[in-house]
Image (cartoon, rainbow, N blue to C red):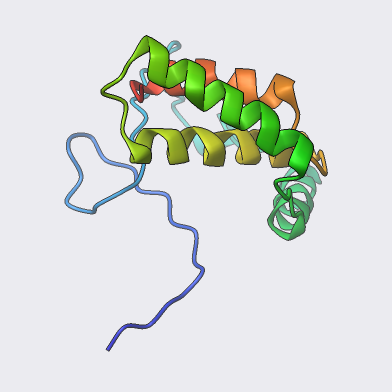
Length: 128
């Protein structure tokens, strides 16, 4: 029996995870590891602010308007010209990344800027 749920999950792993995920990001520390919890604890009110921000982001809808569909279509045509082997999954990933970027900036519509930002993110992630 299939049971659809909307539960965001973040998997942290030192190596390859046993859980399937849509996206993998490798993180390398740039500073020394904190020796105590007090060194990493968020300032008072910081956690509540982050929770409010994340709650608002989850409720924000970024629809694909005709204007955004036009520049997405042009971008996909351009992607196909530069790399004919690009697959549907990569194109869908870029659309979703651009929508998530818009949400993270609390924008209510998808813009060319976020579409271009998504290209940089996808290249960094190795999604062509």
